[in-house]
Image 1 (cartoon, rainbow, N blue to C red):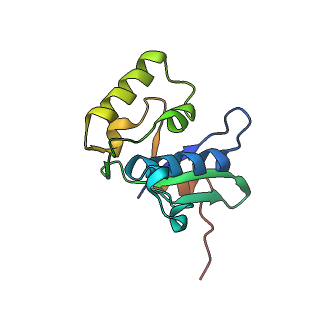
Image 2 (tube, one colour):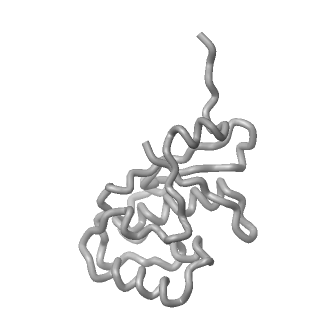
Length: 132
């Protein structure tokens, strides 16, 4: 299992930002205008909250997951979640996604994102361990 810890940014805490990111990844495949009412809360990856601070969040991810790209998807909200991207990186990300029918998730991760393993997450208190 792989994880991305999501840092707070601007007015958004970590959990709020994680929810937007995973929701917007889902919207790449199924733009909002195509979705049924029961898809309003669908996301692409699951969210893990820190047991000691429920406002801290991480995404369960798979860097090898293939995201199907709908030709009419929009990227504004997703890209806005990464203000550290330079204008060139934003352009490259947007143009790459819009030129493809699908893309491996790991290929669209910004360089500023660090993928963590289960050991890192356990060592940093993300899991509650129950003694037998």
